[in-house]
Image (cartoon, rainbow, N blue to C red):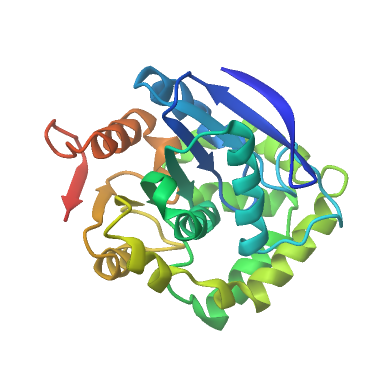
Amino acid sequence: MIQYPLGAAGTLTRVLEAGRGDKTMLLVHGVGARADRWRLNLEGFADAGYHAFAIDLPGHGLAAKGTGFTHSVPNYAMFARAVLDDVGSDRLYLVGTSLGGHILATVACEIPEKVAGLVLVGTLGMAPIGQEARERTAGLIGDTSPEMVDRKLHSVLHDDSLVTAELHREEVRINNSPGAAESFERISDYFANHIDDHVVGERLAAVAGDVPILLVWGRQDLGFPLAMGEAAHELLAGSRLAIMDDAAHAPYFERPDTFNAIVTQFLAGRLGDEPLDGVELRG
């Protein structure tokens, strides 16, 4: 695995890359996270034959922060497409979690002819989340104090032992780095007031017959509960739903080997052909 800076759509980001070949896989994190969340997955996908890229969204991780980017799903989607243009592949496998799923679902609606598979993990954006959830989420985004960082990590991870002192310290330092406060203030405002303006579920349903779609949900996800995944599965005709036990909002991080097996089986058209412990499959 290598990492390097990349300029895309006029914004500097950081890329983690593993593997080679023309089966390009782009992995996009959720709000407040960064490309590192996929470190336990990238090599596994590379071993399965994918050329995998994980990026920091603007305002996150080691990407550019501050006031130079308008934080919205359409702009994030434009940024992701610029990264894909730099990679230069017409055969795309898109894997996004939470806000990252919303972003890549938007990309899939814009260029469905290039998308060979779409994996949405605890995703947002299939339907409006409503004012209460918007305001609650906005408040969490805007508070990057050590105490709130600890609370957020414990909420997205079912296994408390994964919230190590090192992970907590790194999260605090990155999310309080220069320009982060300005970025998170704008992201928080977007969540509170505009994210429901950009729901993409109906648009995605219209292309679901052409784009293979897998939904992955942690059974213990409390912030964005399984009912959201079930509703998305019903909306997206022909989609598959994989429910992972002993995982919350970040099943790819909590159970990376199982998550990788689910995704690679699905993209190969054989999901469920081999045993997957602690996984319920629907569709």
